[in-house]
Length: 453
Image (spheres, rainbow, N blue to C red):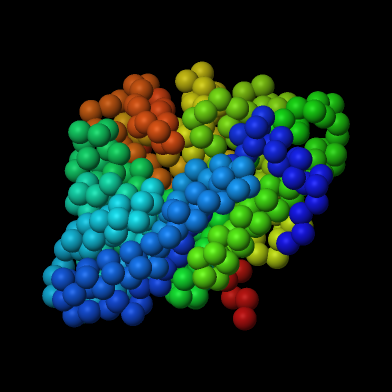
């Protein structure tokens, strides 16, 4: 890649004044050659491969951070969905496998490791069941392991048996980590149309179509986009979209530069750059504030969904102009607890769960980092998941649910998760039962538009 002096100056400005950063350098590692008949054998093979392949990941990322002056916030690993390795094991509980992933992550110094995952959009195998049943205990027993379960796709429809189970698993995970306000649920996400190359947690995994080892980059810059919009306060929507697109172009270029250099130094393939406006609790690093800079008085008010749709589309177009290898979840994230502007809107009762669901039809992910009352039923959580999966299936897009039923908390209370996970008021959820609906079981068929062959 050839980077001009003008681009270098613009990148320096973005870093120093507008919170631009490389949110994550994520190494994807295939574990398909680690299959063993015993849990001990599998754990040994997994540990040895991860610590060998990722031995220099954190060191190289640190070198690049110093050389290019761009902060790299997280170093992470994603692995082959563990459920794929678990069918022939001698034990049902996979907590020891999760502990091995955690141990390996600590050894190489990464922040998180993703891939304690199962793909069950059309049915559940023995390995899938073992993994899903192990999630509550595994996430309680580990610090850096993240889990994900794909329960729907536009080609398969929605596996409602899996949706019902995940409602129960989320409740159990919250109880297993009740002393941390249900923090285990912050490391668990339920997906529709899960991407195989996503570098962002908690949904990162190394897909079966990926190379042996790759580097995927996650780039973020809500502050950069917000400042660009603030500089054109009265321009029309075409100009607004073009400004966002050009800004996203610059961010993506910087991200791909770092990603390719990291891959080169580590001797692995470069995968994708994920251009996602992922907020943090820091002031000025908010997606909600971008929407408000467009002219919405408060995120959640009338016009919010339209503003988010414009933002998401322009970000994707800018990324596609900058690189042929844009992937993952590229677009705008709307995690409530991680976005100071979203938290403010919830506190002021402008932003509700119903409005967030509407926004997920046009955002990059879905219902993300939403704190619910601790007494929310498993069936209500399953219904929430089913609603979100439907949006993804019909619209052929990735959607996800990461909700936290906080034990012993009620709507209006406040919960503090800390760090990048932030804090949030507990959102209210309608206590209207959908249990009979969820208990029907089976699979909601794929829509007609899935027949594209």
